[in-house]
Image (cartoon, rainbow, N blue to C red; front, side, top):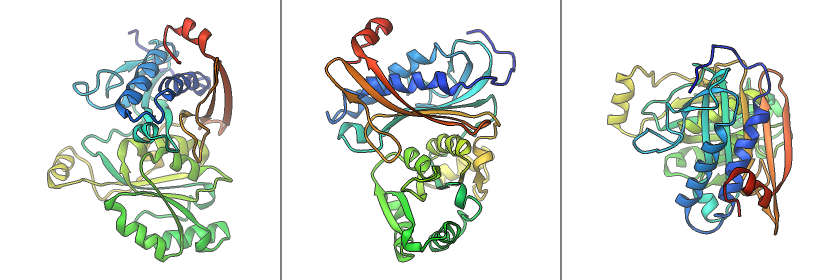
Length: 332
């Protein structure tokens, strides 16, 4: 692959990246509700990887499917794009919500984020992070070191609402039991989800959304992708690395990570020019899922750029027979 020349992005890459997430969403849509999350994920990965090579960028995957020995494609450190400038970091989740897709539940999306080279946080061995995401209205009010009740109170005051009006999305996991109890005690409306916290984090940052906050311990890679999107929307993400055991804690400390540090949006994605594209696979709070008819499909996507603050919603119609001939990929 040819090298870039250190040039910063000078165009809206998100408008190219949306073709990547559309392709991933279309490819895995045929697996919705079929009970095979591995096949759904593989279809999304294959499609996203193939389409990425057509994007004009010299990218390195910082957040991907894992290490090279476990992920044949889109692994951490893999070079993607056609090799021309700009030089960028890339974070991908070809199918965020593999289980959601397999059982036909809401909020599965295909998502990609891109920022200037060297500006995305690499989580190392930290698979999990305690996170809070919020929109511009409450960005200055929330604090991950405060109690759940205090954050609900602050969010309510910032929005001119009551604590009972605040809606919080939390991953339904045993590690979040105390958080859930604290939120309910504060009177918040707690929406428990089984998987996939990127879409709810983006929804929390969007003005006019039904989601006010996304809180709880979830994946660190997803936290980086969420931070990229939230940066475009003007909201905030705060996080603290959450080692699962003493071995993971020791590995992180040895690698130089400060486990007491609050990671803020700019720590997770430091770039000034951040691009995000996401396409719905199943219906959700953020996007509609893929709609397939006899000869075509409709996708619903969101594309964002931090420098301009522009957020676009793109509904696209795809002629599947033509798309299959054009790309050489099966979308039916």
